[in-house]
Image 1 (spheres, one colour):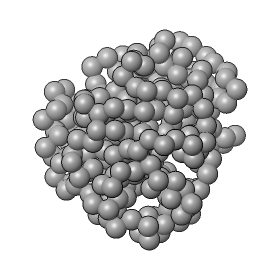
Image 2 (cartoon, rainbow, N blue to C red):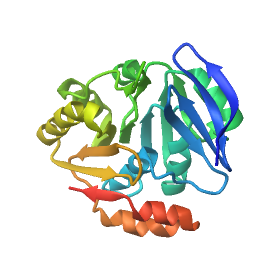
Image 3 (cartoon, rainbow, N blue to C red):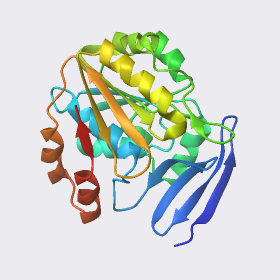
Image 4 (tube, one colour):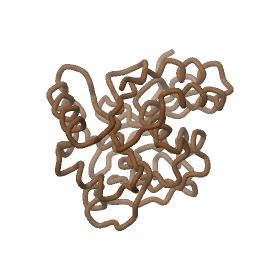
Length: 246
């Protein structure tokens, strides 16, 4: 089915549009999809599923405080609210205009998050809050591709660690296709050096992987248990296609 543009936008940071594809709405920025919403389905098969699922690898299986770096259109908030309904979610987003568009077009409920508009790296340096899970989905749109605004090196990992509780974990969205493989390799090496336990969750669509690190990770079987949370056939099929590697 051909997509239909229902809203175009230009913000200080991004140029894009909201498109309707059947019953699904997508937020597209410079050819990349920054968010997706469907009235019945939660999962998409893409990186948001894998990064949200990473929260379940916290040793408790139900983390109480989650920090989301990069909110965009709020696709992950909707999934996280389903997986860990009692968690308090703090979200940081540089582009406040994207949030406004998501509220207006993609049913983002800001009452479900503690939202901070501003630079995520500045937030990492200044906040004194501590979290069970940090989810890093920080990407900017470039001329031909999306890119990470900073390397996930030891300095960045130390920033994560400062915010984590003793049993806390961090997960970062990594792109796996050829132009990004050097960054992926360097990040995997840093993860292996700095964390006692690591894992990766890969979604069935796209070229993304949620790379997870912590002192102690939950068993991958927690994802099998979580399958019962999904009621639509489409969501159940998508969830069963997530792949965890240790």
